[in-house]
Image (cartoon, rainbow over all chains, first blue to last red; front, side):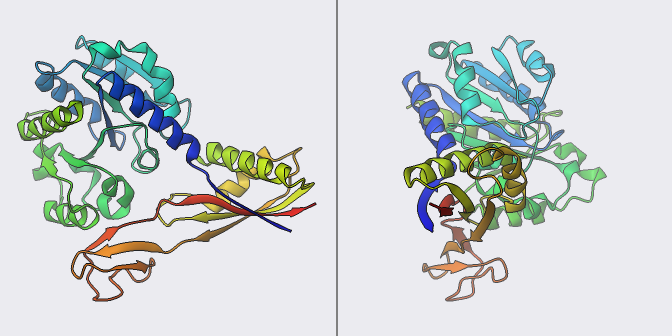
Amino acid sequence: MEIKVLHQVMEWNEDVSAGVRDTLRQHKVCLINVMGSPGAGKTSLLTALIERLRAEFAIGVIEGDITGQIDAEKIAALGIPAVQLNTDGACHIEAMSIQHILPQFELDKLDVLFVENIGNLVCPAEFDIGENFRLTVLSIPEGDDKVAKYPLMFTDTDCLALTKCDMLPYFDFDLARVAADYRGVNPEGPLFQLSARTGAGLDELTAHLAGRIRAALG
Amino acid sequence: MHELAITQSILDISLKAAAAQHACRIRAIRLTIGPFSGIVPECVQMYLDVLAKGTIAEGAKIEASTLPLRVRCRACGREGEIDRRHIACPFCGSVELQRLSGREFLVDSLEVDV
């Protein structure tokens, strides 16, 4: 015989992400989920953004990696509270992991918590971790077909940062194609071209994020 | 790769629903998935074969059906359904579409012995 069930499978993650969002709202902390491939330059971009945002906001960072402390050590060296979250093989961060790690921060002293997700253009996009908004990072050397190939990462994001734009002369990267593909799947999301290395374009992204953070903090 | 955690959740939901109906065996678990859910049913089956050992769901088959995608057309403003082979507004043919669904993922029903 058939039994009707009609039960949402992702409910476990959605319940927990709602809990994370509540906790952060009570402490007035804005959570930003940073996603992109391994080697896209997420940590370098975060480092550059922290230097530009830290005068106005108290910042903390959760560094997600499968194993190791490399990124958390880089961020901690800036004098920023950083906690490494190792997923021991898992391809993404879930809301449950964030819930477990939040007590390691003094949330009342923070305004912004960046989560650098696992380097992966696929799975992290599927999991709400309780973020206020998402920042997707795509670098020039990865190629201009990534928006077309991995649409969810670009559809379910609030803004796209094209990093390593100082590398444009060395790659056959079609900026117009990426812009058009991105506009096709995400008509409202802004796109920023920048280089964390040279600093070009960083002011525009910083100003955008600062506006979003101020709005989230009320 | 994350199908492992998801499969555990599917198994928990199924065992609970089966127990509530006093079923003695689960033959099939029917999933309804949206085209953007990112779920690979074959992968879920592989994990289920391992996770369900020793439970009443041992040997159960995963049967997945994919939903069409609901979209709103930015050109004509109407809502409709599309599939992978016809990515255009069913009314006016525009490709300026806003996605309204696609992330659905639920255990729809079970085939059980009582």
